[in-house]
Image (cartoon, rainbow, N blue to C red):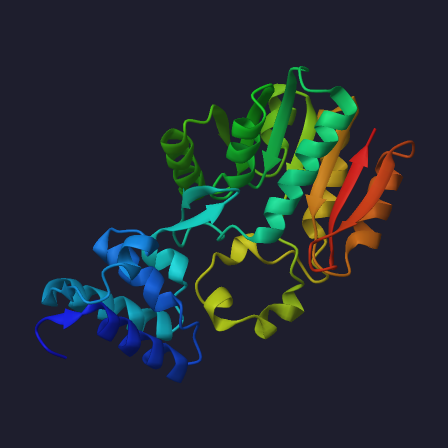
Amino acid sequence: MKNRTKIFEVLKWASSFLEEHNRDQNAGELLLIHHLKTTRSKLLASLHDEVSQEIFSAFEADVRRHAEGLPIQYLIGKESFYGRDFLVNKEVLIPRPETEELVFHVLQKIEQKWGSNKKLNAVDVGTGSGAIAITLALENSNLALKAIDIARTSIEVAEQNARLLGAAVEFLEGDMLSPLIKMEKKASVIVSNPPYIPSCDIDTLSPVVKEHEPMRALVGGEDGLDFYRQLMEELPYVLEKDGIVAFEVGVGQTKDVGNMLKETFPTADVKAIDDINGKDRIVLASL
């Protein structure tokens, strides 16, 4: 292309190139906004402005990398979650809209059960980017959040997000709830979006997911339920007697996970909640 190219021409090229490679054509717009350090409204108001060769070269390289399968979120280094931007990289799972619904239902249940002024300890297990823990802390200032992850590299991303967003979250490195069990700490609210994809289903995932996102955050054993089983063993040591526990689950897993919770906490009120697309996605138990 020419040394200097107008924004609308750059976008047209990216859209056509991505369409040829079966990628979302809108990714070009997101990448150009990122490289120009601008907003969508300003970009659309500047369609006849020229793009420097330096910026175009960097932009073109990222468009080609996305066409090859690298997630757009890893290229721009962030993803929106609950109205906030979270830093992401290859060490953390990209936050999904379904997980926003998990956070919404947890906040709603806390309000219903305890009202708006109760000070409570809450835990996010397998925090990744920190999206769940940080959002809970920022949406409800009465929650004292701890977040656990087995990977130090993931915790580093989450800690950075907490600093940037001004959230008071204590991050702990360890396997599931083991750090709290060792510390003999309890919590009233325990939330987790653990790996739940059955190992036999990995090959059916989009290459964008299976070739780039951390496998430790995706695979939950042969039937996808290994981490829920481990949590059932550990929850009685950590969950307060009147607490709540909420899980995101894979499609078709609500019955199995719900039964696990009923066996672990026989008197609990256990409910399955569909996501906005009508898919079974959340299991919530109230003791």
